[in-house]
Length: 230
Image (cartoon, rainbow, N blue to C red; front, side, top):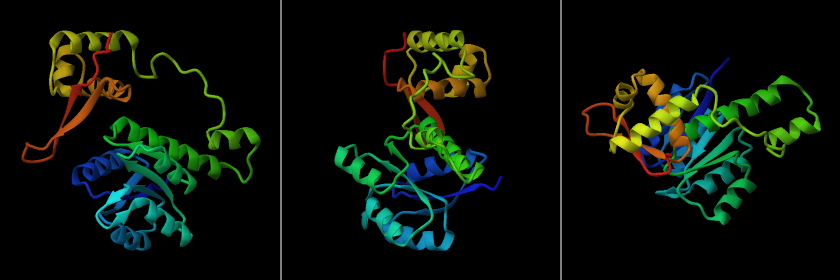
């Protein structure tokens, strides 16, 4: 499968780095261009023709929504995902009217970015499978189909292990902890610990922070933001 090409329009260096590294870790996506201004984004789009564009709203020389509108007027064959701290319903409505397929609120969780990528991949695959679709498939594409009741914990997350992690976080009173530290406390691998931490992050119980005081690549640390771990 050819990788889906992505462009980022983001003037915050840290947010841009986080998005780029997360997207490039996905096997089906690759970042081909990064822009920090509206004018640069329009030029970069014409040069790279990405399939998917992540767009911030507040930019040094304008508004990201205006960039989407201009590209729509140029009949640009791409899709858009908003990445912004703006939560006003009028802003969300404007984005939806322009056909934005997802809207990520800052600070953006890495698990939420991965969810957006997986949703988009499935969205593209549905169109690629067949030349026609029935009503049920259209409803699913437009997210109008009834949501099936989900499992208490997703695949790959064991309820007993998750409960053990929650107990450790409550009892140890940890601050700025890493997947390595949690892995040692739980006697599991770093990869396993990170998977459980990312689940708690997706539930809004902890948050990811990047420590840039390393002299190299930033270190991934987590902080508890809710005591609702019981």
